[in-house]
Image (cartoon, rainbow, N blue to C red; front, side, top):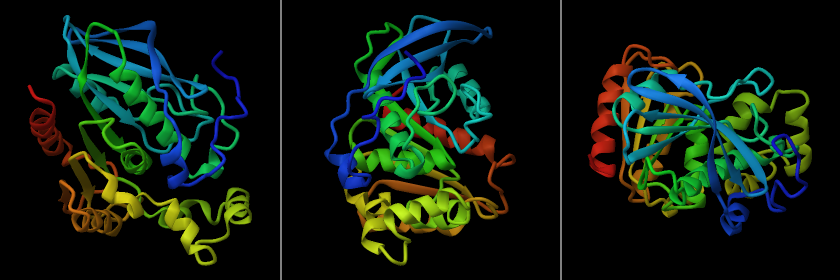
Length: 299
C-alpha cells in the first residue's frame, strides 16, 4: 500500500560503493488514473515498485499507438511537505509529449503518493537515485504497448541533476543517454556545505552520523558521484547558466572537467548571464535536447 515505511528501505551501507553492491528491482509500472490531456497527449497518474517501496509519478503520453521512446524526469528540490505529484517539469513534460516522447516524472520516496523512507535525509539522496534507477528498470521491463523499452533517456534538473549523476555511476547502462539542467555539484560535500550544513537539525544529524567533510574526507568521497565517473557509460548533455544563483557554474565546470578526465562523452553548454531557471535560453536548450535524443535514441 502506498504510504508504508518498510524497515529495509535504506541499505546498511550509505555510500556509493554500498549502492553499487545493492541489487535493483524496478518493476510493475502501472497506470493508476487518467488525468485528461490535450489534443497532442494524455496525462496519467502512475506507480512502480522501487525495491520495497511503491513510487508515484506522472506520465505524459503522446496520442497514437506508438511505441514511443521514454524520458524519465528527476525533479529538483521542492519541500516534500508542499510538493504535489509531477511538479517541477511542466515545460519539459509538454515539449516531450508533443514531440513523440513518453515522459515519466518520478516523485521520489517521501514525495506525493510515494511510500515513506525515514532515513532518506541521511542517505544524501542515494534513495532518490535508487528510485530513478528503478524507474528505468521498470520501463525496460514494461509490457505497456505504447512504450519502446529499448529507447530510454534520463533528464535531471537541479537536485535531480545530481541524483542523475548518482544513478549513472551506481547502475551504468540502465539509460541510453542523460541530460542535466542546472545540476547540483557532483561533489556531495559542496551540496552539504551549501544547503544542509547550517540547517540546525539535519546538519547536526549528518555530522553526528558521518563526521564533517573536513574530518572524514574519505567517507565524503564515497558519497560523491564524481569519484566514480569512470563507471559511466551513457553520453551526457549538460546545461548551466553562468549566473546561476543556486548551483554555481564552477560546479558544472568541475563536473565537466572530471568527466573529460574520465574519458566520457559529455558536453557542457553554458548560457552567459542565465540564472538557475534559464528562462531565456530554454528554447535553444530544448532544440539541443531534440538533436541529442534523436542521435542517441533514434527518430
